[in-house]
Every structure is written in structure tokens, then in C-alpha cells.
Amino acid sequence: MSTYHFEIDSDGAASIEIVEAADQNAAIRQALLLISEILRDHALSSHEAVTVRLLVRGAGGQAVWRGLATGGQIGPHVEQANAPRAP
Image 1 (cartoon, rainbow, N blue to C red):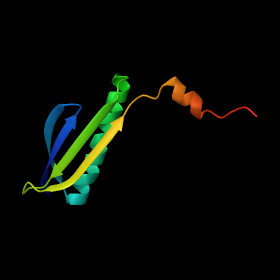
Image 2 (cartoon, rainbow, N blue to C red):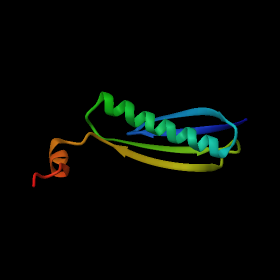
Image 3 (cartoon, rainbow, N blue to C red):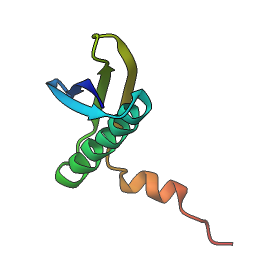
Image 4 (cartoon, rainbow, N blue to C red):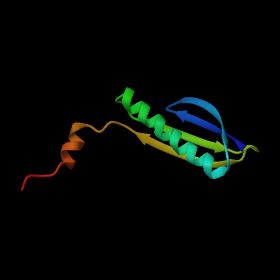
């Protein structure tokens, strides 16, 4: 197992998580899961858009992956525009 540092910025709220992973690919998968959890939690508790940035660093401090995701509620005007039309 190796140690990875996840540098997280979610709309200005910065934090660092230390994660143990079998290899670099496993750390990246954990980072993707973390981003999806942050977006899901924000969507369930707020109607505002959110942007999440995440940088994964290996034990030597080198960047191994960088991700960015945005999410927000879809308004009724968007849902209506995409709804199937009556024949």
C-alpha cells in the first residue's frame, strides 16, 4: 500500500485527505468516487451549482491525477425543453 494525498477544493473550501491505495490506479478510482460523493451530497442538500477540483499526489509529492467536476440542479425549463413532444 502507498500513501496518496488528495487536495480537494469544493467552491473555495479546501481540504486534504490522506488515502492508502494499492497503486496509482486505485488512488485515482478512489478520487473519482470521492468527487461523485461530494457532488451527490451537495445536490441533496443545496440547489446551487458546485465545482469540485481534486489533485492526487503520490508519496513523493508528484501530481499523478487532476480532476474537475461541476454539478447543479436542472431547472424545469431544461426538463421541459428535453421532454418528448406529442405527435
